[in-house]
Length: 367
Ligand SMILES: [Zn+2]
Image 1 (cartoon, helix red, strand yellow):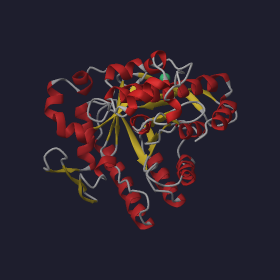
Image 2: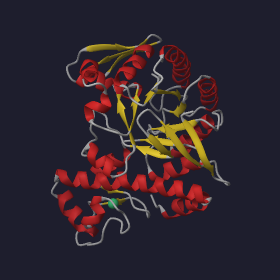
Image 3: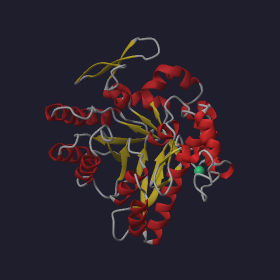
Image 4: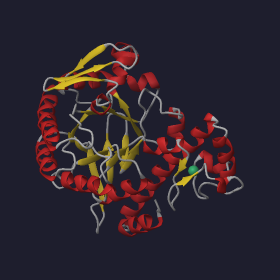
């Protein structure tokens, strides 16, 4: 059993537990920063570790292109190559392959895509994606799914759901690595019937965990949360549930209350690079002149390297000068903010106070 629940909240569906993988034992719920090519944007792996990151997600299709499978095999595996002792999820590439810069064609056989490095054409089938992730030796592999952008027709989502279910069955057949967990993905846009169909089918297959994908892509928050509910309703409570691509503090806290155990998103670091810092009272914009002579910390009780040492006035000064270092400092704060928030959520679940913590957080967090 890779996932054990140690405590369930009384008034919500929140729970805390442990995900055991080959390289790590990760307390749930948890958040994974995105380490696309072997390093996060503006943050080293050492910095992520010091922020208490236990697991991150990388992109298998970009690793396949560079440094390439052969090099990773020569260095034993990806963990060894980058010298990371914690957990690693690898995404199948389904998300990035939707980028028009990469995508050439998709049909029931798989995906044809273009290398962003030199323009070469490549093909990935659902089976090939699993073999690739086996060779990378990540802790958790994701199936290749057909993810539709927001604002497509219902017919497009229906085709994507049928294809995702078919590819999930094909992925299960070729996944032979006992050291690697395999997660299925639920698609279906914001449509109740499609989410239900996909969740039921994916839930019936012997996956180690179930992800909810295809959200936070431009749909309204209301529709996103409905789609999460439609999916969760048909996934066994005892399974670990991973909400892909959702990373705002308010969405994470709401989703934990629905029973989600795991998150990844570029949102915290992307916001930091755009001058937005998370605080318990809501996000603040460091570009505003009100911070020019504000000698307070971003958050008094935050233990991140940015808050331990620096003031808002200093960050304002650096950001106005477009100094790259400020993006490092602000990314550290936002990642640590999310980790601290989830660490507190875990504590509150254990204490049986998650619901009041959730209500207070959402009341105070002004967007
Ligand atoms: Zn901080």
